[in-house]
Length: 464
View 1 (cartoon, rainbow, N blue to C red):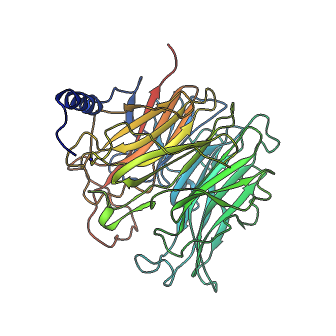
View 2 (cartoon, rainbow, N blue to C red):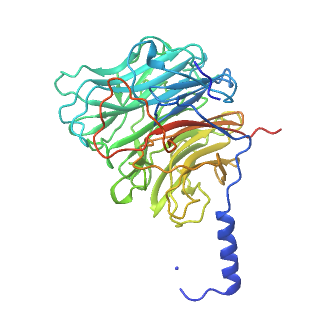
């Protein structure tokens, strides 16, 4: 293994103020303190939809990657070593999510699909598929040789469904009565609806409970606006779970207070714009983008945060709302990206993390404020130290990229611990990048795509 290191004339004074303000807003962003960026995809390989996790027992241990290639670090992200979680046997898959539990073991949740139906509609002659979990007991260096099925279809069943977009999270809260539990939630596409399913493990991922539905209102039955999409959960220090997803034009919340045995009826908590950016509202150079939410909790104050992105301002912006009463009421939306409003620059595919040590709120997103043509993309990190009331924006790297129908995936990922922040994302590979064909890989229908590679950004906000 190699280590990869609005009408009339404006008074002159007012005009001067406006111009000065705009110039200031469009000035280059300051670099995030201690920032560096590492490519973790091995040469010749590609990747999208990455996840990243940090070990709460040993914050120097970080694991990141997609379902095919991962990389682990034992030195707080200074270097990463690539590994293949599926190389030891068992299935490999997509929509990965990584997490460490309270004992320092790492887990990878994935979906596996043998065959979809026709493009755009899964329900035409689907095949075998399912949700699986792999585990590592040494910080991501090696992975168990088998995958554990959470829910799986063999492909010949009557009424076969498609399981999709799994997310795994852990209760690693020191004082939680459910400490050690692992949780999974995902979409089940049925012929007439989409629903959110949930399962839990109380034995470190060896076995999983029978999946139960936690979405009270069903969504539409295909992957587009109106479906349930973008499920993600978090755990408060008391062990209370908060799970959110997009459904239609709202963010929906479900709460469990008993370690995932039962959930309160899910309910819409606030409205948002459509989460799916396709067709006429597509983002140039990107095959598609999703604005689905993330949820986080400040364990010291109990404040809940939800971020998402949408085009209610015309171009795409990133927003956040917060709640101090367990999600019953929410503040008005706050725009996280601090470039001028309606400037035509898109900010999209955000991810949020709340530092469990000091409560700082971080949001990472793709950012095009530096290009009047809205094509060149960089990655921005925003930070709030006042409970999500204001955000400072930082650039994470000096590089930009431009894709041609690039599939960046439906998400990035971000984690934070004790002032150190780790983000991962996909970028269009540099011009001339040569891809090593994967044995047995099937040709993807549709126009060609720019190959993408995975990167990890590290920032350090600790006081010197």
